[in-house]
Length: 212
Ligand SMILES: N[C@@H](CCC(=O)N[C@@H](CS)C(=O)NCC(=O)O)C(=O)O
Image (cartoon, rainbow, N blue to C red; front, side, top):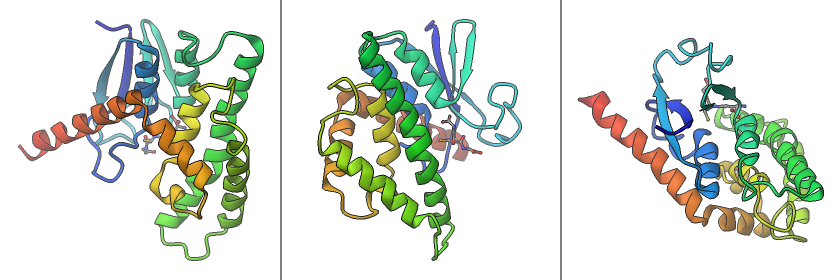
């Protein structure tokens, strides 16, 4: 049995397949050659059926032996401590990786997710549009000067930033070729493809069970 267990829903509708955040943890384990299992909790009743494991009723969460951890960012940093493939061990490389990991969550995703949500709700005057454009312009500039965000190589910070930026509506928001190439570079990695295929296969198999 693997020590590392990644938890996700047992099924999701087609739309989010390939984007559910357990993919971040799968991708990290694939990058770092860490052995892991995926287990599921019921999608139906998700608001309350696992609050003792994820206080907001969301996924993913992670077990590492006796240790339990929720929030995909926390899970990623936990995994990054196990392998220098995800985070360098020198103080400068590590600090750069940490800062860009937090930036992906707290400067980028904290804008992209609310913007995306208003967008899919059909808000024609999405008040976050200017803010969203500024953030994406900044990252376009940063990426025009470097291939990867930290330590001059792929790290967990890129895994997270690319996962935030690869959302189709975010990708389609304006023409930013450098960011587009960055997302393509990251998602072209075999570890991403394997992680994504694994997630999609799980949810497809669940379709069969749901429909009998
Ligand atoms: N900040 C959380 C967000 C988790 C999250 O949004 N999970 C989605 C799936 S990708 C979810 O569980 N959505 C169901 C819900 O919010 O009810 C993390 O990064 O782990």
